[in-house]
Image (cartoon, rainbow, N blue to C red; front, side, top):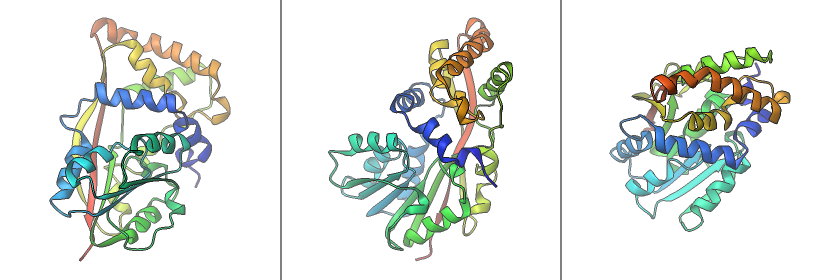
Length: 277
């Protein structure tokens, strides 16, 4: 079965620009409601289980995990990041250029060329819902772990940002655009993710979300890529984006006028599983 959110054309559109990437990074830094950064909590926990000498970050994205690895695992641990999106790889190469114990490569989980049992930690964070064969991807990651190694997968709850999704669906229908509901939470989430692992993992959950203090900040976030959710790629045109933003602004303006903000709810967390020594 084909899924839009694992379609290469969709991924290039949604994740292939550095401008949209920068907006999402900034929003997560400034407006996140989680009591603690998920990567902070996860990495501190992982250090109590395995002290790593080598780490592979599959689908590394912006490298959100990287600073916490350096904070907890030290500066001499080998960190290897792979991502199939050119904008992500470019961003990471700049971010890590002064770190001699890091390496960035362009690859997807299906094209990895590492030998079995090469890493102490393997991470696959906020990306498995994009992978066509989720169980196969986790099996590959499992095979790359050394005995006693740790597989970590941060992800979201089944329904992320339902407030934005509801308004987005209204905007799309107003323009009579074709629409496929977001199925990422149905593919891999905290609710069903355990079913895909080689054996049952442990799970940690955190309640959070985003709170935008201004309409402009929210619209920038929505327009950074989320406005294309469920919309076929052939409709991803500047004039349609502008129309979606205009409709969205009218739909959510009341929140900023009455409450002074707009809050998007979300639960996130991570699965972890340790290989036998």
